Image 1: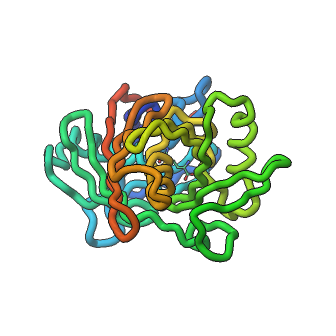
Image 2: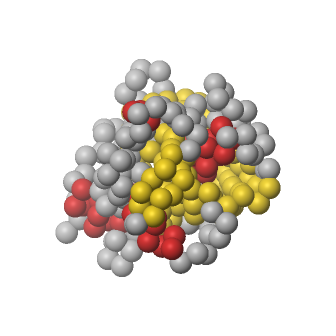
Length: 278
Ligand SMILES: N[C@@H](CCC[C@H](N)C(=O)O)C(=O)O
């Protein structure tokens, strides 16, 4: 079987995008892991499919799978790439706002120019049971016992689960271990994407994310949204924040609880190819 794909990235978070507009994509987790391998496969953090919408209201549906073959409900950098891919395919005009459907529900996308996309990511969800996070009721800060120490975290869903930890030093050696330990913490029944955020000012933060199913990434779009949601909910940042990740910067706009959150950032094409399943 030959499967055509387009390699893309958003701030270094990389993807293989598969045109599945004729039928839903159905690949085994083992095949996705083989495709994701950076030595013997295509190499990517996530696989994305572009499929017919399933809700009767959206223009398209996109599927998301991590490098370990596990599915996810949302991917911020991925949705920008899907929108840019649709624009290149002639299915989405510049400046046009279109609703597309993710596994966790619809989002609205607008391609600003050939390389920049803005997305209405919806309202952040803080209710622990909906993250899911074993915490009883909502709090701005939770104590989490991890690797022999007690950490203060924020928790939120952006269609996928996120833990956010405020740190002074993103280069601290301890983060290397803490990332995977929080991601696999038993209080997050479905696992969690873990963001370490350093505040540089009211409108500027630095972020590093250890992703569920893909490990450390150069960027995580929903991670940037989650960092904004947690910090703004605590009134610690302004309504517009620049989030610097190792692979690039994203702009996140959120007025606060009850409002929708917007993410703006790049989407880049790298190459196209065929996966030859042997
Ligand atoms: N890279 C993504 C998030 C991808 C999914 C995540 N690893 C999960 O399992 O929820 C982004 O840009 O948001």
